Image (cartoon, rainbow, N blue to C red; front, side, top):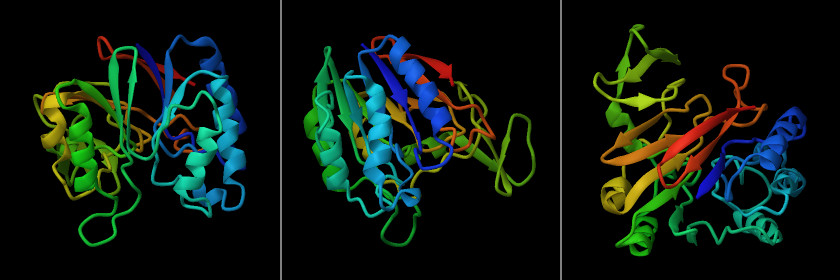
Length: 269
């Protein structure tokens, strides 16, 4: 099975036409069985009164091909609620989204979709965390299987592979006032373009689910396209696809995932 991975379109009133045209070219010409939108499909703060219009502009690019979605932290930063967004999604007959947390069985694959939330309601983290009930749901759904997890914000376990420095080091990337690089001996492909931005609190999701996961796929960190293994599970990070996001710092792209081999092909837009 081949999945077209589209992260962080950030569709909004100004600056989106180029993004939509480039994504349309891929959806019309690439070979794939399913499109997965990895969150922040619309930039909610820029569309407080017309979110649906900008969401439909993106969904219309699917051309009747099956698609599934997860929520990003910016999607519902507007007057449109997640339930209202789900209603728009489900108005498309080719939509496979079935709630905020759900399972999709397709072409012999078990695909797990989780809502990684927006912002943490409390102290200790900026971004939200996976809740115990979400982890319990996921564990019950993928028990005895090898699933692929899709969510917007990367799991905090990635930081076990990253070193932080106060000064520039070889192969490090500057983010804010600090420098970051993969630890010596960590094998990875793709690019570390910024420090990953997971929640600062680890609720143990990967430890609970790793025996039944073969891969995890994330968006959120627009400059990152790396792929590596964390606790035996392949982490596939997708860079932003929207020309509204960080394209002046890095070229926008999408990926196609082969679920049989877990290999990907990055397509620059």
